[in-house]
Length: 429
Ligand SMILES: Nc1ncnc2c1ncn2[C@@H]1O[C@H](COP(=O)(O)OP(=O)(O)OP(=O)(O)O)[C@@H](O)[C@H]1O
Ligand SMILES: [Mg+2]
Image (cartoon, rainbow, N blue to C red):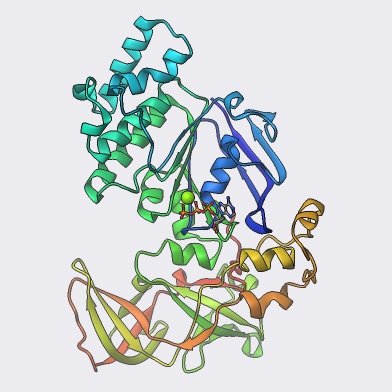
């Protein structure tokens, strides 16, 4: 068993592209950690650095308590499974799975037993004598998995191993993979851009965007209590409402979130009130999942947004309503583009000073680093536009297009972010 520790690990590709920006992460022993993020955010780069296939530009990588920056890949005791795990076409399934043990000159009886056990666990025991060319994509991926697991590495790295498979096969295999790596007790880092895969498989999820760690926690923590607006939006199954509001404190009697045409009152007794009050006079971003909003009768006394239904949308298991209510929507704040981040020398969410190695590698690195987070606001905060409020109606469309809409807000589930996208009341992890 092994642990992985990333201490301020960065990767700069030739040409100055900052693909991973000062990543800090520590896996538990035997943990299944899922690395989640959109295409191009640096997931594979990070995994390849851990495997030793890509050089660490800056920072320290520790594997099982050993500084591993300069350790050769073969000395890391790591097995990696790729998206298109290439198999040896002229070897049978048995030959492919057994291969790592055979080159390690393991006892043939032990190899036979191990391949039999594993192939049963992976449900490929009936095709051991077939060649990869005669297998389906899902079966081939199981063989690749078997070949990686067979020599019981200390660390398992999987880079989107299911992304080429159809939905049914993905669901089946993701359950099997998580059961298998847990029964083996091998620390596993699993890369995906699929939110459902991450939420269903992970012990903890690390969410990345543009090379920057956005959040790290159990599936329940990152979903219910996201640390950044990006995490909240990325994990929302329906589009997240992100609204601009100004924080006010009239006569200091309570906190008011002022959306322009609508206001929401937050009493001082609210556990978030103190954190919000630090932003009095400033604009913040309010995140509302569509299921925190619901049609309410005139008698409803809680916070409401009034508007008009512009359109309804059928999603099979539910209806969504798009309500015009004069609110201002904000785009999801993102870290600066990696090329610009390189010039600015810091990501707003991480803060901190430019590092000397990065300064040397990236022309102009640190030139724009003023150290003042407000300087960055205009650049990283989302752009503003009028937008519809998206409301979840459930299985029955209680409104029709054109109807006046009275939308009740579950104020306890408001998520509040500064303009750079970090939570006003940072969650305790
Ligand atoms: N060898 C390279 N040289 C220069 N830039 C690279 C290199 N490899 C990757 N990049 C860039 O680094 C960024 C991160 O790439 P990476 O492959 O790590 O993304 P990813 O999160 O795995 O994306 P995906 O989900 O599409 O696989 C991308 O913008 C990519 O173009
Ligand atoms: Mg990738």
